[in-house]
Image (tube, rainbow, N blue to C red):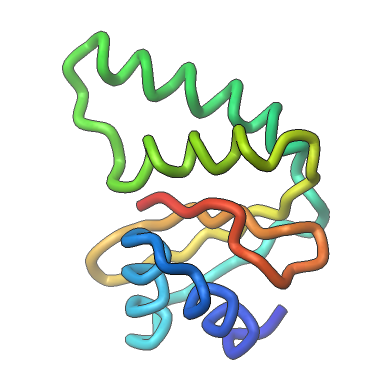
Length: 109
């Protein structure tokens, strides 16, 4: 996946985190795509929902977009997803892409 493809995928997603990630890419942020689909969205939902609850229980402020990303991972069910990390000047993002790399399943950061 090249930068233009990732910008296009994020540009079609209307979530606040995806729009912010898109803006960071426009500002020349670095990004890295995992080499293969990481896992099913439901497995990642399990991990991230537990982390979110732990943050809430301990008073840690969750990452922007985390709650919405958890909902979207849950809705994606058993679909396998790729992970993309975007490291911008202002924020760091975790993007979950569909297995065919054409749709943003969820984004946080």
